[in-house]
Length: 374
Image 1 (cartoon, rainbow, N blue to C red):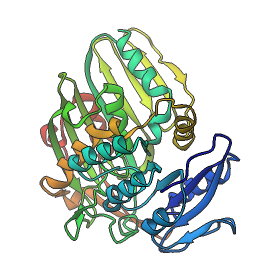
Image 2 (tube, one colour):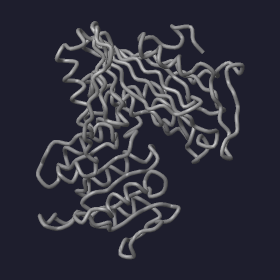
Image 3 (cartoon, rainbow, N blue to C red):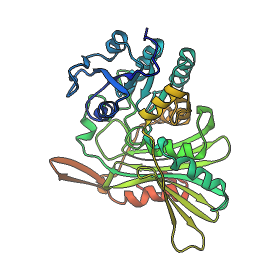
């Protein structure tokens, strides 16, 4: 078991998955004097880490063999539940990358394990670390844009064919019977869905009562890269998301809150809120600070402060993920709408009109199918 934490001692941190996005966690740990990077785990090697850091090829071996206070799991989604439960059983707090778990059953099981161990599970939805999320919800509640019509989300990114082959699990909904969830809704633009839920106040899987997912793909993959979905919540709120990794260029994704007397645009990558009031020619724009989720977890461990992105807040997202990866497969987009272009040594498939299509989904609250698009 992990040794007790001394109040003045650095937090002993292990990072599993240290290449790609995982490297940002390594750098974040090394940047703080109150953290100690005691171990890393990755089958591809540990990368550039201090000589005092132990290097493992296997994450489970690292968790079992090293005294840790915190483990960061930046590993493929099928490993999340098992590794997190192992860490919790050893008294270790967990920062779990998104998407957190592949099913609602795993969500509840991991919550129970965390409660039993009296340890925290923070989920790597970085956007939830921003003060802009509750501020957007508060602005809606203030009545400045009237009554809520619905909440929308828009994501327009450009991902190459090579992106969908970046790992053995990339571009798949499942491998060897294990859910992967690497589609645009559940991974590349998962923050759009999670942030929309946070603003709408939806946390638990039971908060979601209806899901209409219209999944499309331009790439030769097993999952979706261009999708729309409309989600109904138990309180009557509707959330409509138009998400695409097939835009010609990347646009900053955002959450739209449409009201009867105006609308809000929260750009969650920039932590900015734009308030568009009826009768006002220009929006009012506000900027917010963001707390890094590892820093937030450290504060929780030290003083018991509430987490910004605890596992319990991601249940509604997991309910959508489960529906997406177990529902009908993505429909191929009409080849006449797909352009294939080479850039920077990579090949991109872009969909004509996708930018307008995802915006209409969010504004009108209807799927591609219901709008007669793509």
